[in-house]
Length: 161
Image 1 (cartoon, rainbow, N blue to C red):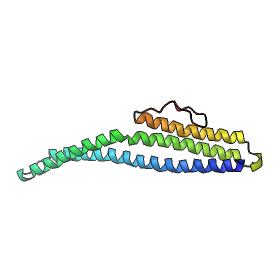
Image 2: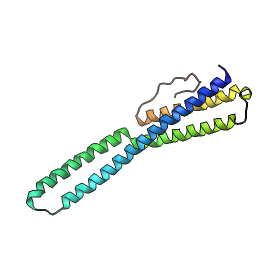
Image 3: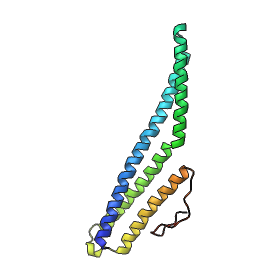
Image 4: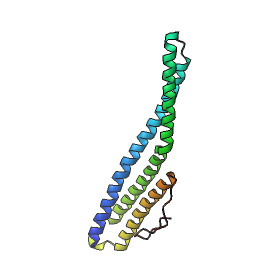
């Protein structure tokens, strides 16, 4: 493969992964925030409802509303703990920043250099760094999910253990 083709492929891959991780971290940030805010608001509302002094006709209705809010808090907290969107958001943000660093370093390397002057070994080094960033993210995701990857070697030579 020609040097210019390798460069184009690497730049395209980096940009695609930046787009993917940008969307993922944003989605997980929003979900994490939603879960936290919902639980706090529902808990506060439930507490206020239970503390209200109302006539006997409303007492049963308000208790049922408070009970329903309590159940929703439990379900939301369980979903939040299971999916762990906050940790996913943080992990994906870190990966996104590493990808931006890689892109910036690659752009700095190629700035002012003619295509025929590009060093294939240096491009391969950037590719290995890219693979390492993605592999680290996969490892972190597996750890968050309580799993492990088998001890294999990536075609680039990076171990997954």
